Amino acid sequence: MDQKRDYDADFSHKDEDGIYNQSPPQQVEDEFDPHREKKLIRRIDRRLLPILGGLYSIALIDRINVSAARVAGMDADLGLSIGNRYTIALVVFFIPYFIFELPSNIVLRKIIEGLITSVIAMVAWFIIIDFPDKATRKGFLSTEEGAFIARRIETDRGDSVPDPLTWAKFGKHLLDLKLWAFALMFMSSTMPAYAFAYFSPVIIRGMGYSGGVANLLSAPPVVFAVISAFFFAWLSDKIHLRSPAIMAQCLIIIIGLMLTAYHSNDGVRYFGIFLGTAGCQGNIPTVLAYQSNNIRLQSKRSVGSALQIGFGAVGGIIASTVFREEDAPTYRPGLWVTAGLQFMTMGLVVIMSLYFWTRNKQEKNGTLKHPIEGQVGLRYTM
Image (tube, rainbow, N blue to C red; front, side, top):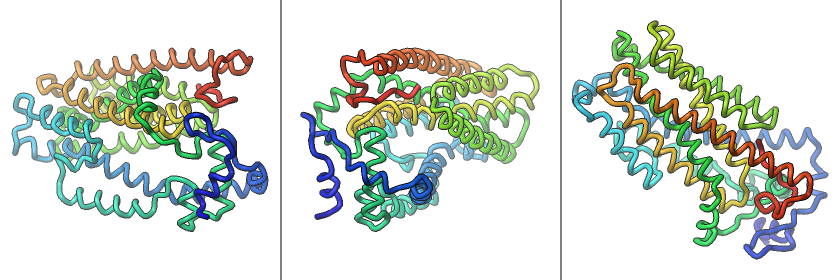
């Protein structure tokens, strides 16, 4: 009997949707003391996080390298400053990206980068293990460890066993307004991320720097963004709250946008790019975690993730179209559109926080008509 069937045997009942509603035996968890659990989680993190980080980094480079190429000489070679050529080039990329959700090897790529992406993707196929049963079959986890991780997932969210995604479930999940709110918030985060990636070198070049120097000066804000994102991730995990981090980073984006758009000192305008980049790059994983913390069932996660990724591409389309060549090098109309999306995100967070607080209070008082996300005892993460 393989490990998957062993796990199935640990769950005694399914509901009408085929979802298991009883967890694996409690004694499995009792055999793991905190030190052993921490050591196991770190081993899993070391296996998964580097390759996932590498994939994300390479995919991100593929999507934004056109801005570096533009200020390095492609602008003059192709006349991208003429009319809306740059905007058209960006939109041509994002429309198929939205439709197919493929990496950016569709357009605007050097060969060499496509080779790197392909090689890393092939390596990832053998390294990434998505669920404990597969990790056990591949020898990465022992049967005991795999059962413990499955139990940990089940205790946390009650969806350690996959539920098939059907058209009926697909339609039902799409009726959950939370998914659309999360998608809009993600769009509002990716929009400034793409905007700063595509137009920061152009803005910096407008300060009087050469193309090469402008590309170099576009890197420090990203490094700062990494530090800021790690800080907010650590803080939100520590206090078990996501919404304050989202709100704070939206404010950071807005402050950065206003400094870049209106301050007369180029040094302060450059500092505004630091703030804007940090806020949006930090909010992308925060919003992803905000959704992940507040939905359950693997079928719903699939629908929610696809919706978020699709709206992320819409953010790229917005960034490509509102930053018009005629507004260079300050791009004030585009910066104001970006700020408006941050205010929208803040409004959505307020609405969702009130909803989550109300539902959590009802769950605590035992007045809920139906359990949150269909799981008894589950509470929303604020």
